[in-house]
Image (cartoon, rainbow, N blue to C red; front, side, top):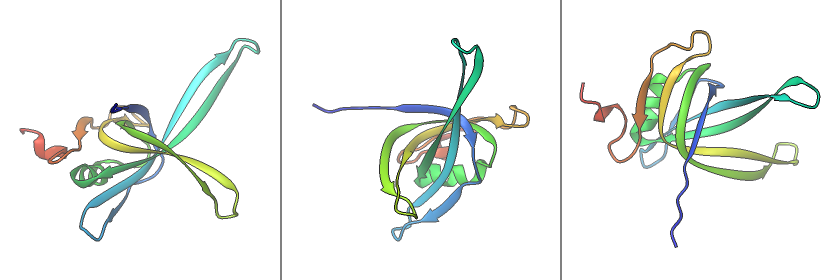
Length: 134
């Protein structure tokens, strides 16, 4: 039986994207997104928050689009497939990361104004802004 999953995150980009190219010429753009969840602790009647960091990778045309448009602090929605990965950090201690391979993303604004440029960008075979008819 085949399976399928999709993850949607909304958060703020933690730093400018990093663009690189594989030996085959395929572009990969990576950036981090902080997703902060806030709630009220009913027992202590205090505001609480927890931030989860996701490492996002965009491929091919979507990578080029992400590299051109995404900047640190931008609020973004990313849709894709998530994978958790365990590894040993520089000091040899166990660590984990959450990696999201993006199928598409939408810019929602900047942290400062929440009203920056917005747009929907999709990956795939042709993907990205090449599919927008204007």
